[in-house]
Length: 131
Image (cartoon, rainbow, N blue to C red; front, side, top):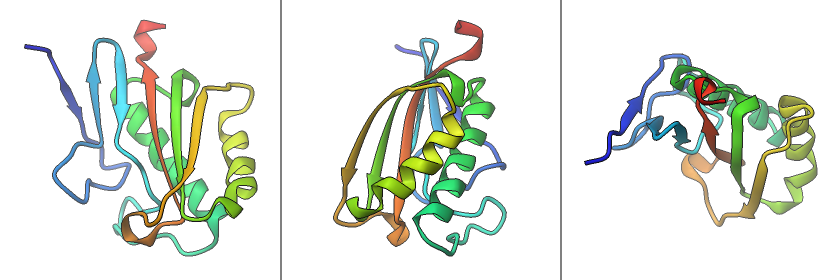
């Protein structure tokens, strides 16, 4: 049977359902989708898609770090937006967080996201030790 290692960190919001923040398998980290929940309070971040994207990427970074990876080792992301009209604002924040690193990415509009979030992002990353 495959070895699957669940990832859990208090530096990102706890899972709001029966799932792990991430799973490590075969040198890769598969994250759950992150929304703009404050890690300490569990409450949604107020504000527009820019504010929420910043929180989402901070949460995603914390989960990746707990797994032994980082934003610079991300291979692929999937971005779910409540409104594709928010793409440019999300993309500006996303670009700041990833800098010159350009992982593959898909972006889709979803009818509704958990907790009515404006944005949710999940990632697949290589473990830093596997680089």
